[in-house]
Length: 264
Image 1 (cartoon, rainbow, N blue to C red):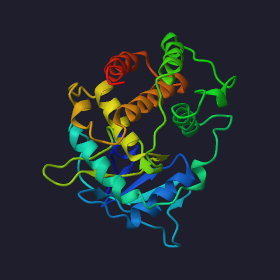
Image 2 (image 1 turned 90 degrees about the vertical axis):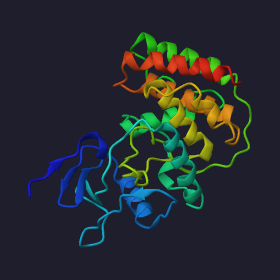
Image 3 (image 1 turned 135 degrees about the vertical axis):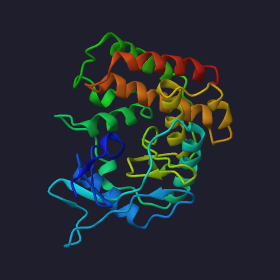
Image 4 (image 1 turned 135 degrees about the horizontal axis):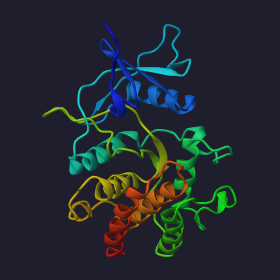
């Protein structure tokens, strides 16, 4: 059987019979995700399970293997937020992996951009740790930096505990009819569970065509306005730092920012 390309739904993976082979960008994160997904049980969530090599490894020569689960991303935004809540109830007991403690280092890779952006939403002076290492090349990138500085003044202390969360659920959850939603990977962050739900909402409002009432439907989540604020700062920082950011993505973030400001 010839391999079938699965596109972005599986990070460019290839379906071979009932196994998906995918190239990995970060060995440590890929091996960690596979180990967690091997035994994790989350209520109402389908998980792609890893397929180990004959010697027991999760990653071999820059490739990983997972069981195929059917489905494709759909704009079922409330269901993705609901999945986030259930998933993170299951991941709350996981320990913090060592690689999440490491700061971004030059020369930057994709993962370093997201590490720096994540820290920007929480550190006292956003992006202070990477000052001098980058300069936004676009007008909206520079505007993003200005907005981050303004939004940072609206932050208040939060008490929600940090835990292991999947910080990239928007556009990666697979739906297949009435089956439980599925995930093929876990992108780890060490933040409150409600923050991860906030990232889903910020993404859905900015780029997924979600209705504005999505914010209010999840207002019972802990410290919701502050979690949304930090999720927005995170996405603005990614936009400012990432070399492949596009100007088309920025207006959606601005609109979402206006909605979140009304809650603060």
